[in-house]
Image: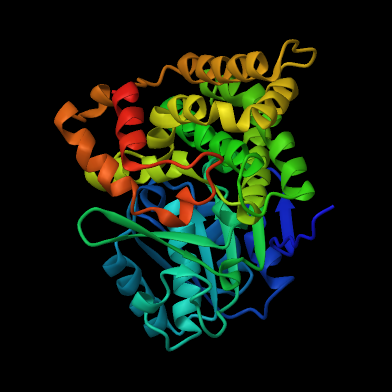
Length: 384
C-alpha cells in the first residue's frame, strides 16, 4: 500500500433539529463570548436562521449576523465581512449557509487570526499563522465545504481562485437536514450533482487518491445517487434530505484529501462569466468530461458503476458507459436543463471559456487524462 495521510474536521454532529440547540453545542466546545454568524441576506430574511440565533442568545452568546455574502463571493466582500467581524471583536466565527457563506467564514476566521493579507493566500499551503475558532453549518447538500480546507474566491471580473490550507478545516461541522427541507428542486438537483462530482473526481484523482478517500467517495456516491431524485420530487422528505446531506459531507471529506479535477476546471469559467451556480456548471459539463476521461479511467469508472448498479456485467469499457449513462439519467430526471445554450451561453463564447479553463492548473493536474485547450473547447461544444 502506498503511504498516505488523511485529514478532516475533528468533530461532526449530525442531528435533525441540531440548529435549534446551537448555543449549547458551541458552548460545549468554546468559552461563551462573541460569535459572528456569516450568512447571506436571503437566508437571514427567510427566518430559517431564527431558531439558531435564538439558541445562541439564550446561551449567553453575543451575536453579530453578517449577511453580505453573495454567490461566488468576490475578494472585496471577504475583506468587508472581515472588517465588520473585527470591529465586533469576534471570538468565534460561524458559517451558516451554502458553500459561499462557509468559504467566506473560513477566510474571515483566518484573516482575523493573522496579519497576512488575503492576496497572499491564493494557492496551496500559502496561509500563514492560525485562525479563530470556526464552526460550519450547511444549508445545502452539495459543496461539502463544512469539511474541506478549501475556499473559492472571485478575483477580478471573472476569475475564480482557490485557497487551500490546513487552517481552513473547521473545528466543528453541524449537519441539520431540517435546514435543507425548503430548498427548491432546481437547487437541490444542482447541489446534489455537485456533491456527486466531488465523489467521482475524488475516486479518480491522479494525485493523493487513497483507501480512505475511496471508501468515502463510494459511500457518498451511493447515498447521493439513491436519494437525489426523491429529494427533488419531495423537498419535505427528511430521510432523503438526511441522506443527501450525509453524502455531500462524505464526498467533501473524500475530495478534501483526493482533489477534484477537470469537471471543476471547466465549470469555474461558466460561473465566472455567466454567473451560473457552481453545481449547475458541474452538471452541464460532467458527462462530456467523463467520456473524455473514459479510456484512461475505465477501471475506476467501472467500479463506480458496480457500486451504483450491483450485478453490472461486461467489460470495464461497457461498465463505464453504463455508469455514465446512469449519471446522465439521474441528472435528466431532476428536470435541470442540461445544455449550455439553455443558460445564456453562446457558441461564440466557447473559445473564451476553454482558454479560461486552462488557468485552473491546480485542478487539471488531478485529471486522469491530460486535458489541453483544444480538448476543453471540444467538451464545451459537446455540452453546447
